[in-house]
Image (cartoon, rainbow, N blue to C red):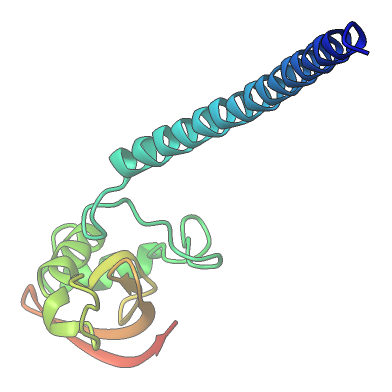
Length: 171
């Protein structure tokens, strides 16, 4: 019996040594998997942060951005070309280059004509305008957040242009 007790104790210690060694290896394996997931998550977070930073560098204040009017607002080649008879009538009223003179005058007087105030620190400006004929014009205005359309009537007397807003529609 005295010879068996040391062998039982040695076997028990040997079993415990193997058991703790196996538990240690399993815990290290789980820790390695958790570290890999942490590194992967950290890399994804850094990539997203870099993308956000690059987008912030691309953002300009609303007043300096090139605005693209909503669909249907781009008047190019659709409307707004004065006919030869309109140009002759306007030249007879004192304008040398009617389309250019009217557009320049409209841009100079836009702050008095736009029927809305800018929001969120923006300033309402005319982004696109068309001279329809020898009496009417159409304009799109916005501040980067809100916008609208205006129908304007203008009168030309001895080269002086007077504008009146006939109607406006906010978007």
